[in-house]
Length: 438
Image (cartoon, rainbow, N blue to C red; front, side):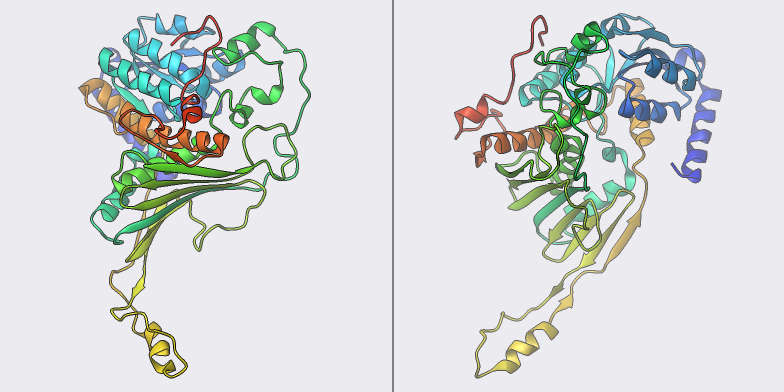
């Protein structure tokens, strides 16, 4: 966060502290305090009308670190159910590995807690739909951690696209590019866990497998039992932004190709992958994950691009730009050796029909935390409510299913099933390890 943003949030926190008494603060409990959990905790700490009253993690050092920075004396738990039973907790943040999201979310809603749950919302489509159902039945305020939804400058980009500023969008592309060759995350041998009890708790509803340190903290994202890989890690952010710009809920079809082509580690997810969806519009949407090469992927090296008939929108982390297309009112000439003049004149007849535009801003998670706190108090719908998070997560999850089944899949968003592939439908859910149930 830059200095101006920090001063803005400091003033915001100070003003709330002066207006609100201790009893007016939203009392927060945090479940999962690793990499992303720590970042989300920081985002909430920017605001003076919240208080960290409870923390939960399997790692004591993570809890100690969070308690120290919280400027409070939160109760520490190593069992999330005890945190949810704590009557001092008004709302909870769930930032655990993905395979724990659904169970913890459902339990939190039924315990009467409002919930900020990190993206991706779920590990499977069936889990996500159940989470939408339970949140509605329990009347809970939910924010899914797709924090770009709370960035004002990105809302301006959405408004520009939806107003026709770049014309009809025929292609929307997103990229996750970094070179992890040759060793990637490494390939440590399986072995005895430091704590068998902790390993069992970490696995939770996932299948029991021998301990491997790459399957635990942070690196779990490279294993399908606990994550959808980079398609759901980075891809959910991008899919949500592109869906938002296009004004579409769900794709019509999806396919994917790729594999573990070069990186020599023990990952399960691909190091090279392209997923393609077709949305109504019609618009082709793609996600490219290239982890054995890091050359720039487009002219601006941007995370996303939306190609319209009048111009292209390039989306970066803190800015966006519209670059006009040059359009001709003439028919494309028939090339002939008898008339090269018309052929040569065609390019010079092209001209821009829109003006370029550049906008900068911030998508800091603190804006998303602010929206959640406001909605907890007002009971309004959050910027990224549970249904929005489910739709964006589901689109990426079915991309993984297309990859795993090597299929071209039709998608029915009403039933959330594949009409043309029974084998793919079996991957929409999985059997939890006993005794875990959703």
